[in-house]
Amino acid sequence: MSFAWHEIRDHLMHSSTNLHFQRSFDAVRRAQAALAPFRDPAALLDGLHRTPGDQGQKNVILSTLVSAAQGDGPASDCALTLLLLALWPGLDAIRRRSLWRRLGTADEIASDVLARTTEAVRGLDLGRVNWIAATVLRNVERDMIRVRQRDHTREHLARSADPDEVADSGESGIGADGYARLNGAVRRLLGDDALLVIRVAIEGFSQAEVAVELGLTEVAARKRYQRAMRRLHDALQEIP
Image 1 (tube, rainbow, N blue to C red):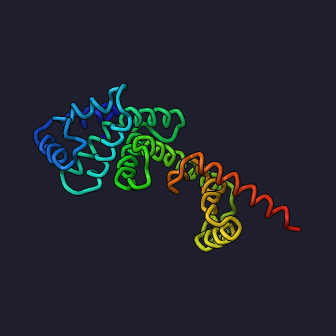
Image 2: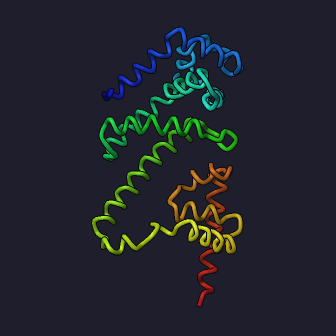
Image 3: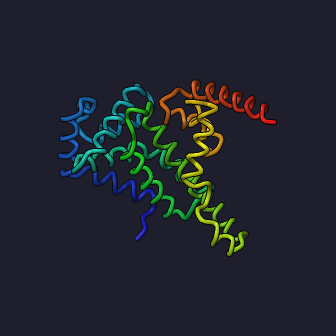
């Protein structure tokens, strides 16, 4: 049985009001100083959704919830539910854009958004992320688009390729060995900037996304990428 998008939110909101959820919230609240000012989940969500306010403090609260969601037990489920509700306006925007991009049916998109958000939260490296909401939402939407593009590419290749060639082709792409050779060759030319160039120029990540991965500011990543591309261009010019 499928549920409309708004019904999923209503279900999450309703579950956040029962006694069991409140007890789990109290346990998280006692363990996390950032949540101490909020007596119940409704007060917390109201504080996070209020337009005016200290964005840095909101980010601290979200970081606290991510940390709790990465644990175990009822407290983890409670924190994850609160994160989904806190991020709901952004998730709803992703859902609407995904429908416009025709990334799937309404039910498929709703399921994909929630599953990828859960995965993103549970796997988030808090030591390498500055802004929780922006990072999670960007990663969810980026991954949904890339999966769809990959599927389209595979469908196109399947329609146009010779079946005998496909059967004998082995792994698609350059494979793990090819990637290792590429990384080694680029690293010999660019040193520590090799991964930055591979991520942006070959794998299609944005400079902002790679900046988060490498622990850089976006400005620093852009400057290093431009410098590395000049070095790569100069090296190619020397090839006879």
